[in-house]
Length: 233
Image 1 (tube, rainbow, N blue to C red):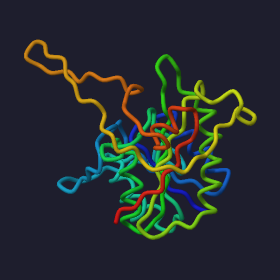
Image 2: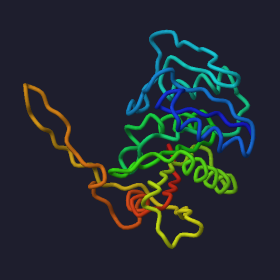
Image 3: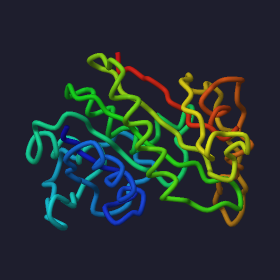
């Protein structure tokens, strides 16, 4: 298996290194990632100017564009014969309606548009917690192994949210969260602003977002891995 790996946190982000290590357990890895951070850029692509391509290190390329650009460049110019596109691991969850804003998710949605299956990985960060990238690597590897055994149809991709390790249930087996298939949450984040100095500043607490029993928000916030099959059609 050959894996094209990208993200929206930039090529030097610890999450992409965790994902590259996880994927290398199953095959050959090629990293094509943004030169700089593009968090929250959605499915924006570059068509009005040249896109820089720089070899960052052997097997790693830094792209002067968005995550969706990276998927396009990777599949057309660098590793056209890859089997899967993997994005992440994003520093922060991409749950529910976040999938429409996320550059991480857009990277694998672009892969689906180009006929390649993909998995977007994000790691939830609970209040007061920290990112445990070793935990994320192991959890991502479990997901890759599981998803590869499932039939993925043309136009489908996966959105996966890993829980904050501090939330994993004490009764879990060997401290490992369950992998739970679930739908994306349909409730929007509260949209509130604080006004001051002629400007508006977004205000919101991510963990307080509304959720429905069994949706991806609920699954991730209760300490398990939310695995959601999505489709572009």
